[in-house]
Length: 105
Image 1 (cartoon, helix red, strand yellow):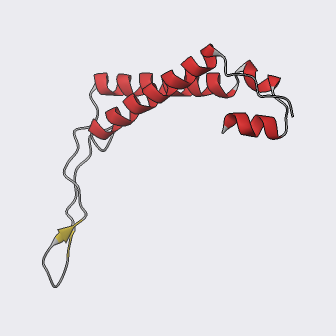
Image 2 (cartoon, one colour; image 1 turned 90 degrees about the vertical axis):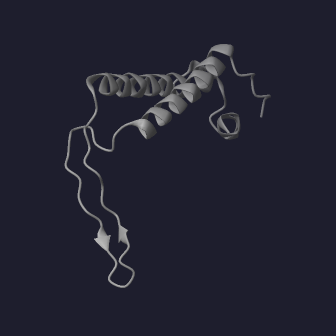
């Protein structure tokens, strides 16, 4: 097997931007309401012996138009960068056996 060529700078840049976009998307999703549309909450189940309520949800106001637009923008960016990384011409230059798997790892 020939030596694996170095990763091109544009591929490394795509990968770095993908990691950043994915981190931003994850952080945004954690901060968003639990439902895109407004929904009523529901009570939790009360344990018969302890009286402790588990489960249930508070009512959800849904996403604001700005939140919905930002979620869509970041998800589209993550998808575009994923495609750019996985279809980069660099991968076609590698041997289709162990060289490809080794380089992707």
